Image 1 (tube, rainbow, N blue to C red):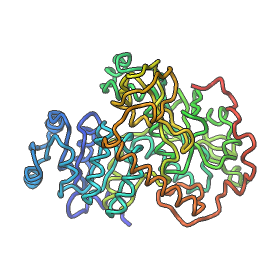
Image 2: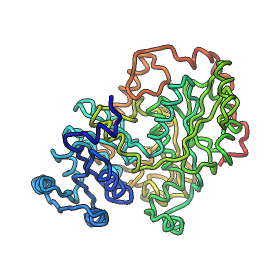
Image 3: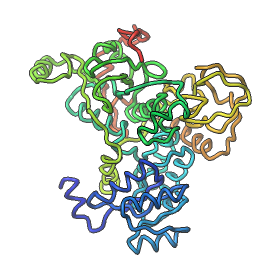
Image 4: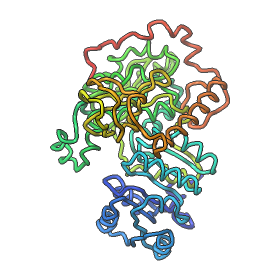
Length: 471
């Protein structure tokens, strides 16, 4: 098979991409589409339509504002990028092959993805929050309509999955999939973050979600749900390290290897910033000897750490767009349903009658936890709902603690996602599915982890080797 670039260069016509969301990421995706051979952006939408038109003007893209599908099709036929306010128009457009959902709206992102899938359009998610909370439903909707639903490449979840696949191909057993975070403050808010956000030209709520750890937890929940993983503790451990190889010293990997499933976690303050890592085990004497031969920083065995020192978001996004359209392949999706979710905790003392303000706000942060035990109020749904009781700072919130409209689009889509997740979990449990990195369930095989570690209950709740180093 020819390499991907050659295949793109020789296409009879380009892959036509529609983008929802013209903010920082959406504008960058527009640029990347139009410099990648065989791919072009034909439509872009934003609720603030000026963002979409300004993005086109800044990037010298011929564009035309469209108020309905007819005007959108006319603009595309004339070789212009169709610009609109309503993302649903892009999701309905027959001239779009692949929709990239890159808005910051949770409910809207899920709705536009569902509409696109229902119209036979492949969907790539650069909206991690909508991807997490609605993923199982959207995955099944894609299957029913014969199209691809996938998390986007370039962001940490996609990059981690590619690394895990590579390490597994080498014959190593993945024990941990990890992220590298530079700074953490659970109690930051859109006001206190202003100086840092302005330095990075970021939206204040978005920068808050990065800093308070919610975004990290959402991303690692995506990985866990795709790779049949869990978190060792709510929120993960997140020890502070100076270099990635120190990861081997601050976790008890013998204990983690003895668990039923591999885990997701992160390290704080480690070099390289912006990177990701996988810790994997190999106990074969020959392979260990060969690993020690290489001049590397992976460790001395049997546990080794492999890292990728960067993730480039929009720059890397086009590969999964091409794979979806050309090969009907998905990079990452919630194959195992809700193995984990991210639940809301109070950033400060909250009072009965207060209205929660969602991800990156003043009222709550999110922590990843395993399902189904102690399921709470998902952070992705903790927006514009009213508290029924007082909630203390750092206290977890539950669905019964808030007044919400079950018919609201995000709650309806979540109910469908939970139902699909339950079906998925029952199917994989009945099949005795082993830990693996494939995104599509495969026939049963004997899990190597379980064969080697039969007594996994002992010491399961043991702490990190260096608990004082937690971030």
